[in-house]
Amino acid sequence: FDRYLGEDSPAYVPHTGATPAEVVELVTRGGGAASLAHPGYRQRDEIIPGLVEAGLTAIEAFHSSHDDALQAHYLQMAADLGVAVTGGSDFHGEGTRRSEFFGVLGLPQEHFDRFVERAQAAGVAAR
Image (tube, rainbow, N blue to C red; front, side, top):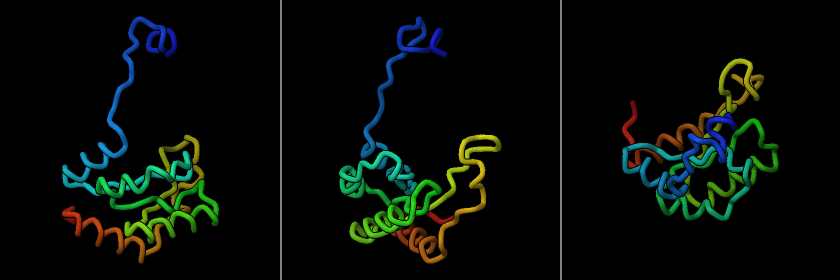
């Protein structure tokens, strides 16, 4: 990787991209529901209110790396900001990091229902 695509390699292309708020706007403009995945990973809570202003639908409170305190923190933040919550195991395939959590962590039904309500209110069509 470093030889061909690394920063000092001949095929290197500098990374440029949209801001998180721009991504949320693109997702919602495209008819989707934007959820902030595993916010406890980077712990940049200060950007979340701006993402809500940009159209964020939900915050992932139930995540395999969130302990009870972090889960409670994001549940409260979602309630305070008026957004839904999502959850998941962060499973990315057999043999990958966190693969042991596949099927272990779910989203309680009441939170799923709230997410669907928020998504529909934002114009996302249920399929």
